[in-house]
Image 1: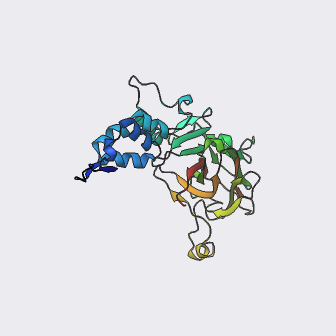
Image 2: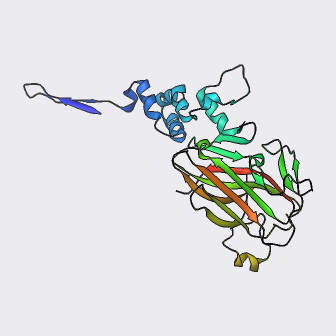
Image 3: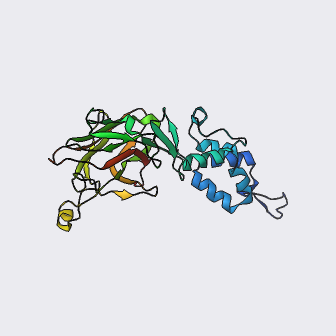
Length: 282
């Protein structure tokens, strides 16, 4: 910013230049609330003035979920957390909400919400049968108290629904099933499983996934359009079910994972949950 002036006698023009650093701190703080957590951290690393402003509670409170104060975020601590510390705690340590039926955390770069839906919130065919088709187990690496292990079924069907109010508005989401396999997941290892994701009342996207994938190259080539699973940093596997755009957080999303065509019995699958994350694709 700059200004110039000249005397009545036509004397020398004087230029005044103001930099961004010359703005009042509350003004700079307000400007940074319209950026992203990533942009704020970059700015803090290039200027001492920005560092003190960007680390303020006023900035980081804008990056937290609007209802963060109503959530039981962290165990009580003797030292109160700053809003920045609270933000990064939510990025690295997912919370259990809704009586332990959902897991919530924030995407580090954008601050957008991520959700994992517990199997207890899904409809799983035969999971409540008195016969031993499935069993609920507790394992330390799972986020939820209990997760289902597939023991022996012919009809494999998992369905779920979630309100988009749990997610960030104006955001495209990718949906994943998060799982582990035992003994090669017999009956499902190289069988294409039909999956779908979509807003209720609209046409769902349909595709096929593998829980393991074929070892035979010829079969793999024939089924090259089937989505393969990927290993996660936490040791679990994930396969992408589809995408949707959350426009206004007032809809519901349906999802399905179904394999009923193969006559083979299926076993050896442990489902941790269904995960909703902001899509990496534009």
